[in-house]
Length: 144
Picture 1 (cartoon, rainbow, N blue to C red):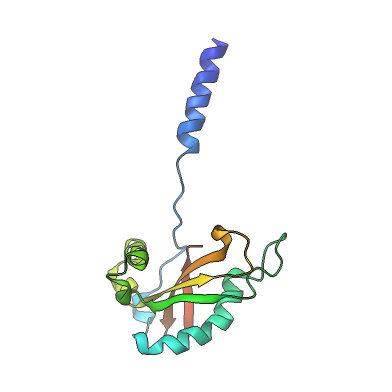
Picture 2 (cartoon, rainbow, N blue to C red):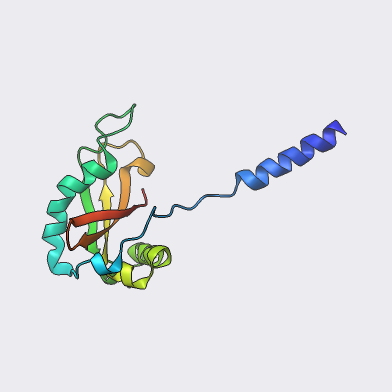
């Protein structure tokens, strides 16, 4: 009987332990509050990252206190410009699934590299941005 219980517990842990949670935005932007943007706004997005990245990532972790103080922009473009780029288009699909096509089409993908980070998991960042009519650029989803 004890062995049966252990086997069932082990199977249960394997099954339930392997289910991954999927990240979701806490809330979606309100469509009527978003501004139309285009690739012409790229410089503005890059400048806004100086405020956005510290707010979103902070400076680091306990073991790596300044990990997020330096970054390189890998991609900064409207989601519509990711179509046809396999590595980026998947994020457009995520944005559409999360908040709908209209929100995704008014949003941007920013992919980041953090050179002070030890390892790929911490070194890569992906954020979804949009521009509010009242508050300017903001992150509505942080993937990594």
